Length: 199
Image 1: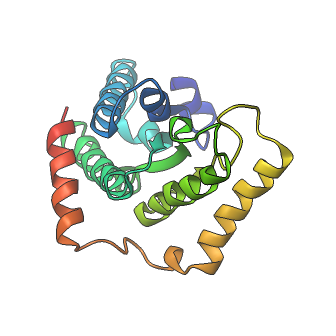
Image 2: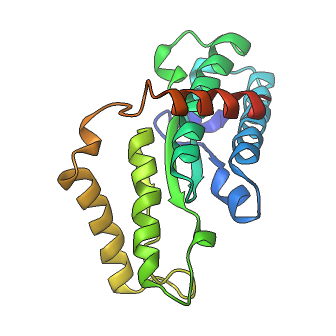
Image 3: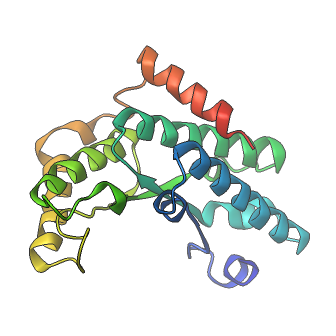
């Protein structure tokens, strides 16, 4: 982190791996809490080396797992962003508003896919990626079809790209920032996840 902050300031030096927590059995709240705890350890280590928070924190990214509970996943990402902003601003003294914005990448949880009826995985992947779009993530890595039982085929790779394109360009959901914001249910769920994941 120190080397990257000084020599490679645009390189993403730390990726907080939420997908690994989810695939090993953790739930959305545990994923978020553990990723933020790991982020705090990285931040404190860099601060102990003499770096200022704004030298490196903007190059950290959260790689979240997205599972089938659409509203919970949207709320988890929204809670993560609120918690991140408060953490870097209030606890660690970041003064640069750009660093208060958490960069989020998602990957579909392979545990939601099935070998027995792989065509249904297309629907699952689409729903999970819709959650990512509704949460406003920066990038997605969909698992679309046969990844439950093999290395992705060429058809699966093409399908993953097409799911992204259809959601982005044909549905209109990517044209609105936080389209579910203000929903009583989603706001309450975001508050609940934030409270339970608070580290």
